[in-house]
Length: 311
Ligand code: ADP
Ligand code: MG
Image (cartoon, rainbow, N blue to C red; front, side):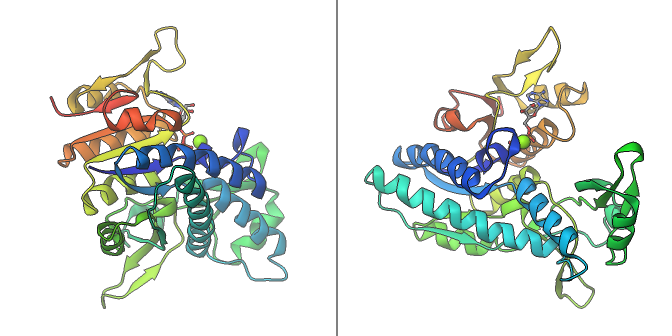
């Protein structure tokens, strides 16, 4: 059985999203203990991960040094975080596997994700990223081609496109490595967004891709039977934050679509996870699950978390 695990921010940062190098390394080490348990149980695993806090840190460096070193584009930041997080995962996973007496090679693939150059987000970016800045700083960064918006009292904030992922362009490389026995880390941060020009050539673009939605297309592309979205809650919850809050266990795509339509899942957090889990199963995947890192092995077998399966 092949399983794609999508790791959320909490698997890669300290409490409260704090992202010092030590805290990132520590969080990843803990996450890889759980992943190694799953591998040791005999499941064929591939990994993907978010990169929000890490890209946030790079953006701050860009801002603070813009008058000395030209800021690097957002797609470069995505590529950098794939490298750094990927390397940290490899070291931690190697250690956790060795401790279990499991001998498996690991690899990270720098991964590009195709998006539509006509995606409406490119003419009207809406996804806020990074810090709030005073108007003068925001105007200075606008000189580098960035779009900044006046957000009132808190200051100005950069907005970028958040296009739909269409295709994981390097899925073939991930597949080949997985078939050769590698545990592969790929499509970090949803993949580096690229567009195809009319002459067929590919070019990185300044945008962010939702890592869960990208996972929903990476999973079938690498022949995964199960997609597990690992986050910091054990279940998706209906009536989240209300007196009627009820964790969702086993659910059919139709039932979950109904809850989604009734507005049970917040757009910036649980929403894309539910959408990704639904797309995978509606597209022919056997099972998807949304659960906490601690429960991934049980969730793979349908024994924990919110488990989406056809009836
Ligand atoms: P990650 O960083 O792992 O991708 P997010 O922080 O984006 O995770 O999303 C997980 C969070 O979503 C939970 O910690 C919870 O605060 C929030 N959330 C919003 N709506 C729901 C819901 N209906 N059920 C469960 N959690 C929800
Ligand atoms: Mg989070």
